[in-house]
Image 1: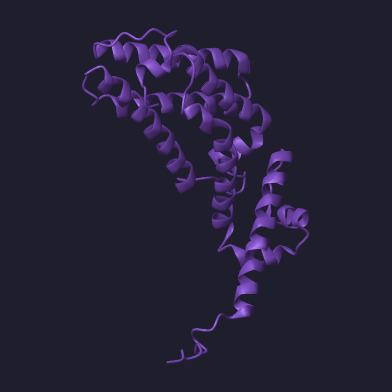
Image 2: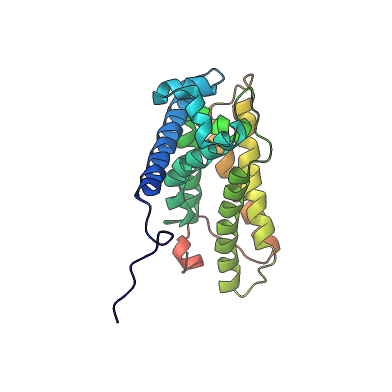
Length: 233
């Protein structure tokens, strides 16, 4: 029996496929332009500036996004991807505990130094469109804290200790870093250098980890290899 040829409803629509590809290319062009302009400008970045960089009319931008809020959230998602490229390797720590903390802090602060306006946009958005409860930013912070929680739980479990403190400790450390860095960036009167900020974070992270783990009956040598504490890290 020969197969029936596909009906009109089943036959691929070449025009629809081409249009979908065109839309995807335009969105990519707009988001790339937006990140470039935000990263370069100390001024409030409007849709007109983004459109100008992308080489398209302003009205075209809104054909691809439901509004400024949607555009900003997609921009944040793009920036988060750039940040994660930098810090993701440190979420699978290597070397000693001290080196692992140093690597994570250094990678994060290095990205901030290289992309201060992108980091600021993640936190507060643009001057005329402030960020309020970004799903992308909140989800990323949670994912990083959960990864740290898994690492801590692995150490505790490997030593035969209860793991119930792991999540609270991980979210506490993540919140400490996030709050300290955001306040430092948002306070133009601060005289603290980024090197001193980095040293503060390294010491604070270690002291929080060390103090909490000691309360749980675990003494960690900061110069011990991470692999000896959490073989599956």
